[in-house]
Amino acid sequence: MDIIQLESSLDLLPNGRLADISKWTPEVAASIAEHEGLTLNHEHWAIIELMRDFYRRYNISPIARLLKKHIKRQLGAEFSNDDYLDSLFPNNVLIQGTRIAGLPVTLLDAEVDTPRVSRPVMHKNVDKIVDDESLDHFTRDFSFQGRSIKVHPSGNLVDSSEWNESMAIFLAKNEGIDLIDEHWKIIRYLRTYYFKYGITPMVKLLTDYLKEISNDRMVNIDHLYTLFPEGPARQGSRIAGLPMPQGCID
Image 1 (cartoon, rainbow, N blue to C red):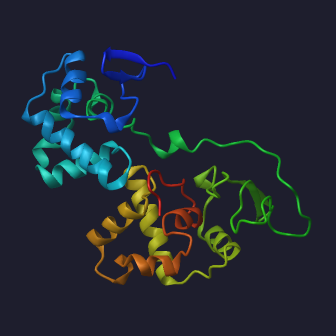
Image 2 (image 1 turned 135 degrees about the vertical axis):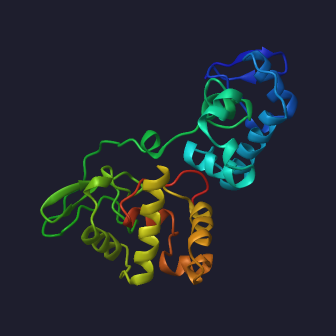
Image 3 (image 1 turned 180 degrees about the vertical axis):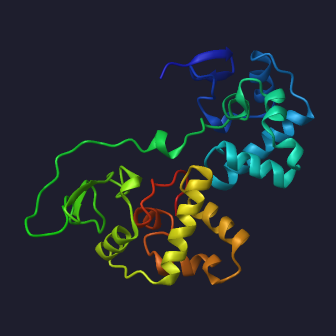
């Protein structure tokens, strides 16, 4: 990708973001902000540091609901509303704010997980289509209750609306898992999180969420891996009918 120069020592991509996010410094942020007509004050810096803290912790840029939740928890509700954030970053805190903070662009699952078209290998008299026998999960599509269900190479459904609990049981069995109550609790937590925040949580987000709403042993990361050996976020999201998580998954 072509690189434009903001300053002789500062390489930016055409969208205004750092070509190398490891090169970010407060001085770089101030320079990018000045280029966009902003003079950073302590209020800007509080939001910038919260966004960078979120990225350091989860390895993804925050989406709007998660950013507001993070701000509300750290700074207070009055600092998490749209009017306040727009007053600091007129071109949108998720676009302009993350750019100044030296973070990658914020993406929702729907923007990341686009389907890839390929021709599956058919196997007769089997209630599935297997295209890579080295993997336990489907990688193209499978037959379920007389329908052909498409999946991404990761095994996650192309159309999450096709999911139901019977399909979860079928997908889990294909991966060698017999679902019990504890599996279902995690599956429902994953789905609740997705429909609340718009992204599938990677394991760090999932465990933080579980700590907020539950005091039982499921918060123990080792126990989560006994339920989903390939990862509670990676494998759990497949069985839960959700897009693959972003960032550091499991």
